[in-house]
Image 1 (cartoon, rainbow, N blue to C red):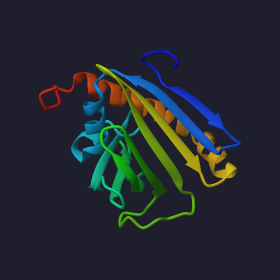
Image 2 (image 1 turned 45 degrees about the horizontal axis):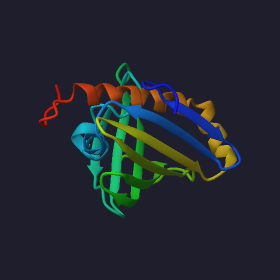
Image 3 (image 1 turned 60 degrees about the vertical axis):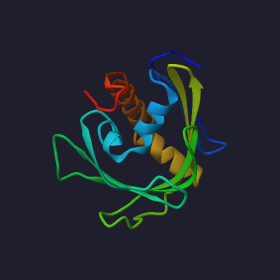
Image 4 (image 1 turned 90 degrees about the vertical axis):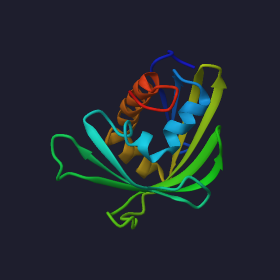
Length: 173
């Protein structure tokens, strides 16, 4: 894996995937908690300068995660998303199918992404592997042009910061 504190991002047109790898500065149970708790994920999900509100997060096979991201400088611009969980194996693995949605969690386009998250235990650190597979090469290229990889890297910067400032006894600082 690449440098310890930054994301390694790979785009594979043939498999229609963007793969993000990162070594996070926290043990695997805390990383899992940060990924699967609506209270925690709202503190770091999205690029810098954006705020996420989680409306529903039911982390189980078939469960729904529904959220909205808004830029801090313009609350009129919103990005709604929804994900339906597939495999959920605490604390090491989960999958979900993610789509853009409306405020009622209805899918608004045919551009779905299958996301696989793996957490590999390295003691006080956790290797995070996120594989996002797109329905088409065109959808992959559109996401790349919109800066998805860079945005996700910023999101993981925020996650790593949250992990390192989170009080290991259960409350965020």
